[in-house]
Length: 203
Ligand code: GRF
Image (cartoon, rainbow, N blue to C red; front, side):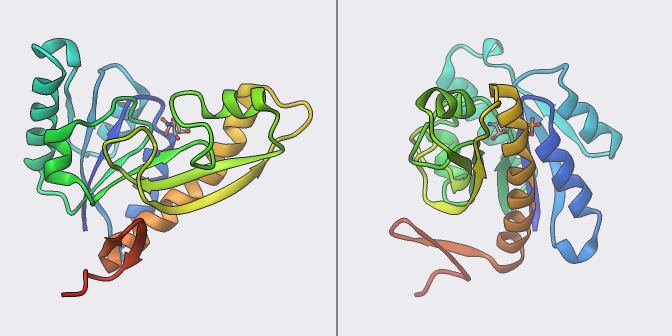
């Protein structure tokens, strides 16, 4: 399957996907990596592996809607079967979802529906939960609300701070992402109400 990955940061999730995709039986070819900002480690990781990159900064567009249209076009130019948001810090909009809804995955560092938004690990610590984790889901118009593909639980330890907890979550998050992107890329999938089911949609 052809996969476009969108990133905003350090790109450890991207790196895990790149490493997995070097094995032919993984079934994933990362055809491009896109970002909403330049000068990030994630783009360097892609370039190092000879993967094409593109950057679309919101400030270069008249408004968010124009940026969203441009993002949809930039991704479509690579004709992906699947889009993976791997630490992409922007919400995709209606133009993007019209084209890639139902086949865009995102990962969130908390157990949805708990602690949506930008600060999953911090919010979990502040609440005092003893277990948190990561959620892989199919992107919809909400913030971390889409149909859930997989979740992994991660313990919160007594001496955790936000950074320690986030790093522990990210270790499990990467393994989950690699496993499920491969599974979904190899077998096709469809959404039945909120359930993500392997195989093509029944007719
Ligand atoms: C991940 O924890 C992801 O869930 C969150 O941002 C982090 C991205 O890390 N949205 P990286 O850029 O893949 O290292």
